[in-house]
Length: 622
Image (tube, rainbow, N blue to C red; front, side, top):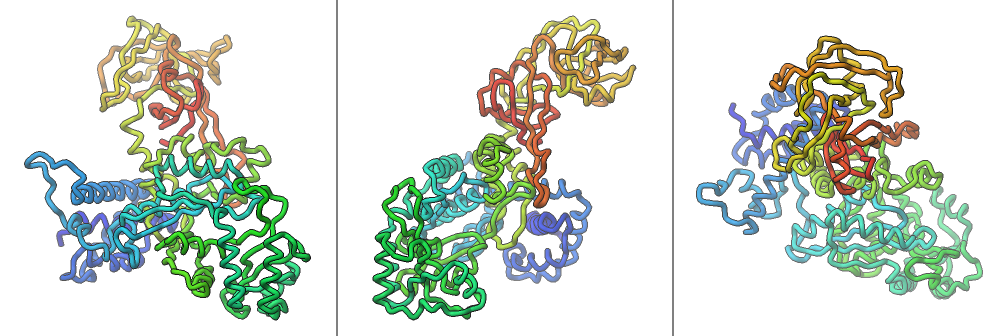
């Protein structure tokens, strides 16, 4: 049976994703089951996928042989090519591309035909269609709480929200969920805006929940008048115990008038019971869904100076109350939020039903974080507060500032997020997948330079030239640089320890050398030679021989001392990893000092990096 490329790549993507989610183990039954959901698309209506099961098993069998790293790289590569192709064809269909020269126009393929179909169908390798979406009328919202710096999880939500708004020619609202004056800070509002600007996310409307506090008070009173809410002044311990044991609170017996008077006093800050009083929703204390057991709608918070409204209010709504009302008032049609809120959907819709407000459609997706790099404030904030990590832009952190400083590009994050699509599966994707997207974007904009870690001095006889011109990129026109030298160069100790007398090596872009002898020097080496070693070599000409090992080098005459910060995972499971930052020291070409702070580049045989200051770079990835 002859299989087309679309079929093979679809099965590969399903299988590789399965491997990534399940510790490198592909489960054929899961792959086959998942393939059936795509069967109409990949083989059409006139074929039975059952007849393709042997071919699916054969593809899975071949993929099983790959290492986990190879699986991740192949997954990212196939996905990237598919997404790029889909976007190019969508641009072409929408008339956003200039017509190609005659003979160069792409012919329609089955994939192009598929994405030309109405939006009622699922787009392959993209976001699923939105139920009930109407072109031009879709409104999504990104509602971060300004109580910390935005991280990769926020990026996932913001990108998905914006992509759906753009997909249906709708609108995106950035709404700061700022209803806790004890936690909100002005710097967090600014950091969130700066983060989404960097991501390229462009909301059409920006607002704060705190702008609508008095509107929320009015809707709370409406609930009280309809007997769907009551004031409770029981102790927190009693409330917790009653909710666990499904015991109805005595405060539910209060009259509507008493609840209204009490609520007015809470609004004005004059309620005699003080901060212990709350407004609760009259749900169902016997419900198996504990979110419906008379949850809190408003609580008194004193002592906080809100960054937007100061000390004007002391009664603040909870997310459970503010979110559905704000979504409805803002005209949100599709509210996307993380899976942790799934049990609160009943409460969300119940509040809107009882207030006779329009209801958005709720869509859940899994949180995003990487193994060993948690996004939880519970784990990150103490590191900052205790001074273990000094700044929120530390490259070890999953904050957008940290990822940016590390050298991750915003377009790579967007491609990565879209590759995950929307799923409820609680998996932690490998950061290598993000790195794979980033690598393809960095490669054409990063000059190649030389760095040697723990440098070892090499004296070369008969090195009669004084300089050499080296291309800044092996295949792209990024200019050239001239490196000056005499007869002393440095190589990395990692290479030096493998060298034996009589070996022949190629110094990249310079010459071939034969190792004559290796000695220990009695002099202190100013560049940090760990073994105080000196190597003597003979210039053997410049003939290129691919069988000769190639190593990078740095001229003693044209070098600066340099260091690279290499971040490692912060945690191993729940345990903090003490060794989460490696500092590699050595010498680099002086040309690197001409690069601007923030510029990406690649140290040959080391990896991609980003300039942090004049003598320091941060390792991005290989």
